[in-house]
Length: 272
Image (cartoon, rainbow, N blue to C red; front, side):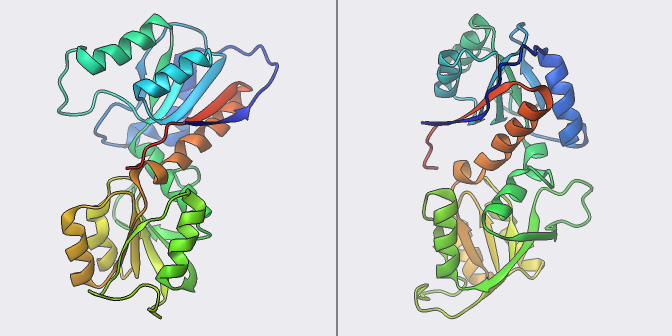
């Protein structure tokens, strides 16, 4: 676990969970998305907010870290109440929410809006970290597209692997576009790249349709290897968690500046 203080001030500013959520809803255009979980305020801790903790996923470890930090709110990319999950607040789910309520901590979550935002979204911050320029959408017909297309200085797969490793602190799993190709000796250059962080590995086919040389996401499935080889597109699985730290950390910086509050990003290590 690592932490990063976005802004520490002596301000006495106090805001409510509702006003904080209203600002974030508007900034992220949250109501425009049909999502798999509710975006915005998910648990109201009933306390005014002076300290905020941000993180990728609202796991119990992040809640414990927020309690230790005396936080009044937690802001995450992966919150609660996903479609299809059991409704009763029992077991692990009940334990998490009980801790939030007992300590008066509000939970605010943004999923697809934080993937898609053109400035602080997960795709945008990953592209920036890799010195890439976003030039369009993977699905151009969508009003609020989640996946993007980016360009970079033409480089080999090995060069891109090194760049990703440096930016994310972990080496990606690379599936070469051709079966049994040695990445170290290949001279194929990558310039046009599809990007969609997290569990978007199945967008690789759309990336191929959009004439991308490669596709970057977080996870990989068994089928992804065969799809990449048969479509002739390089695939880089960079980690679901690793590719989705950027958006929520950037949102924390925006909130800190807007409200002059203390916002601390806490990274709960996750190799997936």
